[in-house]
Figure: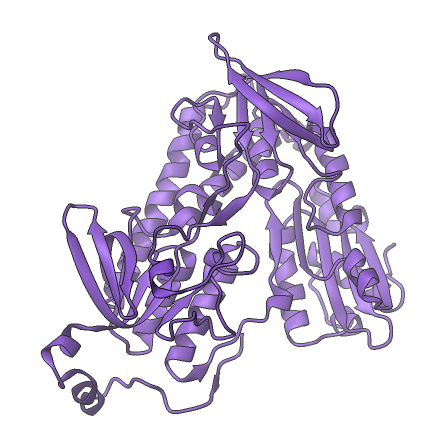
Length: 498
């Protein structure tokens, strides 16, 4: 993201400016500069940034805790379970290779869930602390547009309140997309969505995951490590359809070795919870054909998310949405109503917390008279399985479709000394660079700490680096990152260790 000052800031913190902006009337004194509807990663970051730039800010959130889906029932709790289950599997399968022996190793699921809840509580509470630090007003309730400069709030504690603001930022997030043939009942614990999967209190003997995307594979990994037989049902002919095809194929092979079973080009036509607690899952080929019934202890519905944009006052103000409910905005995140903006999962683009955060900062910078910008070509994506999968930029398929000639550099972690030494050497680094200019166009990694390693690639691409630029940059030895360096060497010349 670039920050370039293009005009005088709209707001200053001097006494003269404060008097000029807030002393003209009693109503204006009570009016906020920015009201943020939604306290998720995009919303709370936007609120804090606005306060840091001298604005009077309020943030409206109905959940009762800040952090949105990500911190409460998404990114953070799922990573806690992924880490705990990985530690258990590592101890069970790998400790003996390091001379560590133990008897009667067990996983206490209740203890795992307790650790997850503690992590969530600490982080969400930390955001409230940041709000206090920067004097962001926090309103607990459901906010809905009631005018170009007003938000009506149904307060969680009862009653209602109308908030006036010069600018309104909608950071309303997304919700699970329902699947009519598998109706979720998280309280029942048999057919659950990603939220319900975080509360499973007993390791299911069998788990069916409907949808071969990121969330389903991550949560499937948690329970597979703890002993569940996991079957993934995917309508398409491959898992993780947005990944580079070569990477996705290798990823599926790795998951198969971990015990996953895959039913591709298959659709779910019905689910029935039986009296004995088992779930009958009716399956058909995606193209049509005979029905088979598959039995499971728990079914996880993981077929994607949709913008949470219903019943928030858009239609009444003439603010448009596209066919799947995303709010239509211009390059400055502005809707059809000039004083109303939208960011995050509610608008076009990948539904990622870090993308929403970048948009929140850029949107607020624009309001303050700066030139906020998000480079959508370098938004990384990560699958937090083990090994992790990370990517940024274009895939081989996209480059071919666009007719771009490219070089490909590949380096396996099996040839990386650090990975071999610690016994964690599954995966590869793949670099795609322009054939003529050597500019890096795409980065795709399967391997340990891929989610951390891809940041080097994001930075390189942000500044237009070539594969040779990275290859000629000294990397510490022994580190996993040397695999990244050698993949870049392979893209423009030859690697040393493979």
